[in-house]
Image (cartoon, rainbow, N blue to C red; front, top):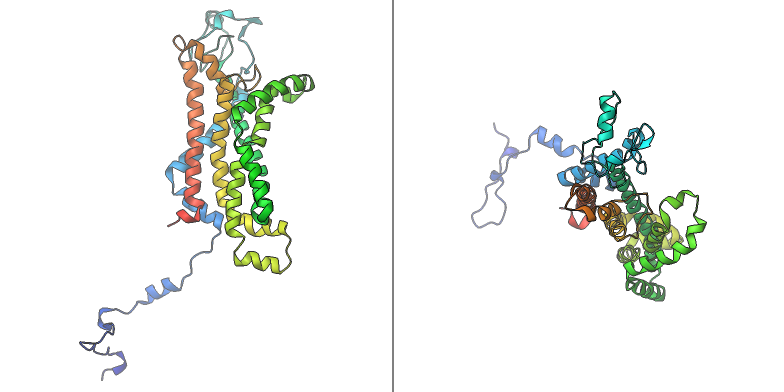
Length: 358
């Protein structure tokens, strides 16, 4: 005798009821799969999982890590320094001027024949008989340090200013944004030139003999310009995010519970716009590096003999026809750093921006 409960009711021809005969019962295995809950995750972990699926972003990240390790570790073991002129038996080797990559000077070849061991010049030498490879490494170190430090300045000032302007709104926001508009209209290159001239006279004596004197007053004026001018974009971005977030229910609940504005901004608002901040900082670093390279190219960068990629490219400009490789090495490093940071920034945007998530 069959069980009437297992029989499916017949569907009437004119009925809108779903025909149950077209469906099959789920198996025990399929039921178990639906009962298993997805593993809990955080916003950062979920973003990193999406970032790892982006091959261009991961390749850029590995390139930047390899470059940072190279410029930090290799100078510790490299036999030449960025300001050292090539010497043989304690005397300056004048024949080591403008050597091609992986070549030796006449005096070095004689010393090798006599049994001395001399490390090759991987990128050749410059016009002052200095090893070019170590100068390119120190130039990349200076450019990366400037990019990271300038981005940190932009992040701190822009984050504080934009948070205050966006949260309080009203007249406070109007006054603060008009100040931003005024600063945004100032020409940054002209400000760097003026500050370099003024600070060169003021700080040359004050910085003499200190660690900061190696980079010179031009670089200090560059940091000042970044702190004065380049934070306005970050401030506008943070202000726009806070204006859209501060009207949410959890912010109103925090106000009703008596939370201070500082705590609301720090605990409730900034974490929800952190993805946009991370992406903006990642894209600000190559902009700062390119600005430093440009200013060093026109002679407003680090103080000699400290190299930067821009100053090396400027020095190589005079010998383009005779020694074109001198321009190639710093130019390739600049392109590699800027391209890697741009691709990484695009990957971070795709991974952490909620509007771009599928």
